[in-house]
Image (cartoon, rainbow, N blue to C red; front, side):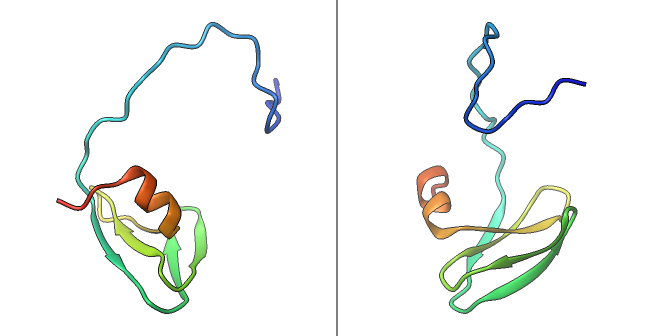
Length: 73
């Protein structure tokens, strides 16, 4: 089994892809919070977002990541 290590990008011929514009629901939470996700319980910090995906899955999203990758419509 091949192991890919963080920061060591393998010498493959990568293609470029763009993430599909899939709408999700979100709300900014102004206090620390926990949410049960498909990967276990995760924590969000004050100011992070609680996201609800297309299948009803919930997960936290850090404020800085949210602001870089999402636009509120």
